Amino acid sequence: MYTSPELTRFPVADGAGSVSQAPDLPEGFADTFTSRYIEANGIRQHVVVGGQGPALVLVHGWPQTWYAWRLLMPKLAKRFTVIAPDQRGIGLSERARSGYDSTTLAADVIGVVDALGIDRFAVAGHDTGFIISYALVADYADRVDRVALAEIPGPPAPSNTPPLFVPSHLNAKLWHIPFNRADDLPEQLIAGREDVFFGYEFAIQGGGLPTELIEFYVGLVSDPESLRGSLGFYRAWDATLEQNAERVTRKLMLPVLAVGGERSYGGLVEHAMSALADDVEGVVIDGAGHWLAEEAPEQLLASFNRFFEPYRAAATADLVEAPAVR
Image (cartoon, rainbow, N blue to C red; front, side, top):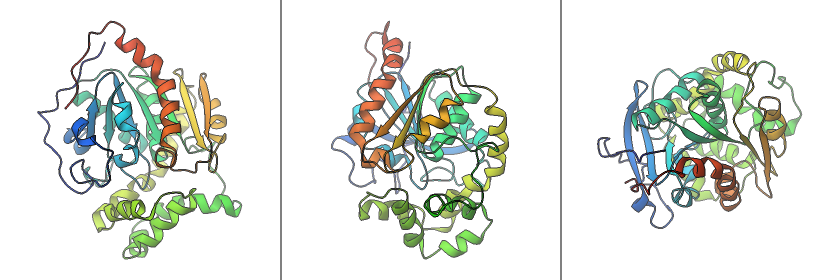
């Protein structure tokens, strides 16, 4: 059973990157979705919510925001209540000074769904959102029905960490992790050159995104506080490694969809998750690089609809039609 959350008690979020100001949204997007500020886990989080049905949480990656999911959200909203937060420190969410480890970031998501009055939900995570979603299902196994994890070769852990010196094609994809972990220096080197730094990242991870889209994302991290917030995840890497060292000792029991882009991590996602979960289905999105939801939205949507359908069907089996969320 599920009930639609009541959103009117949460303030409307209005600013760069909100539903009211984000560019080039699918037609009718604002008729279904709304941007709200939700105080949860001690910070103010920006969350885009809309749709009808059991809850599906979408956790974006770096250096993106909830906006990465926009092309999938309208069709998902016909079957699910879609909840797409901006991660702590990113987009319109609070630029907290701490709390960027995976345990706290997972608790941020739990805080949002608790505030919305939702008990059980499904989740999909991409890139850093993969790591957060893995932490979420490992730490709150009783709350999550199933999870889709996309486009990194497994959650980082001491047993799953590449060596410092790797072949150049891997170094090009991974160098930003140790770079971003350094204190203060990245901001000094990136400031005023955000288009160079982030433009390289979008290109080297598979490319395929139009220039104006990359410029939109770059604009959201082009002030000092936003840039610092976007790097917070990497500066908590040691804590996340330690947390995952414990998590990987417990296999996931829920269904897992492991998704890779053909021109990016491909089947490595399924390979990594098969060691960490008992029920893993792998999907490789033909022709896609790293940015699946924007490079191949229809293919990813088809995989999500099929994978999440048993959860939706079970949640709605005894339910008279619920009112749409607005």
